[in-house]
Length: 126
Image (cartoon, rainbow, N blue to C red; front, side, top):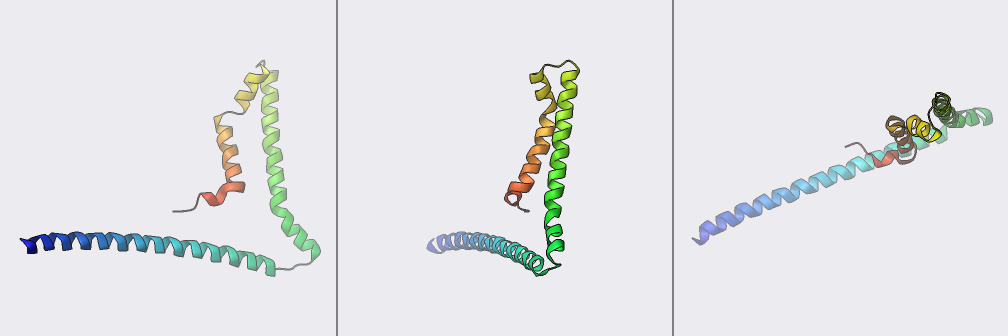
């Protein structure tokens, strides 16, 4: 009887050890992935810092993303203001026009833009 109990205990112990090893392997894989992402970002920053095209070229390179961002922001605001104006001009009350122009689809678009610029790293790839 004791040998039979030892057999089942040994089986349970091995199963537990296997689960622990599996979890440790998953944690190590996550650490490796995080380290690889950090090294990638560092290498991109090092590459960008090594480029030097002079004052004007560096300023032009630095202005591309902000100019595109401001342009699309102005376009977004322009479309929303125009939509609001057309709805009010079409006879809707100002409150109703605001609700209609800033509907769920626009809110989803707006939140995805904000998440991209300010919270994109929170949604890591898995």
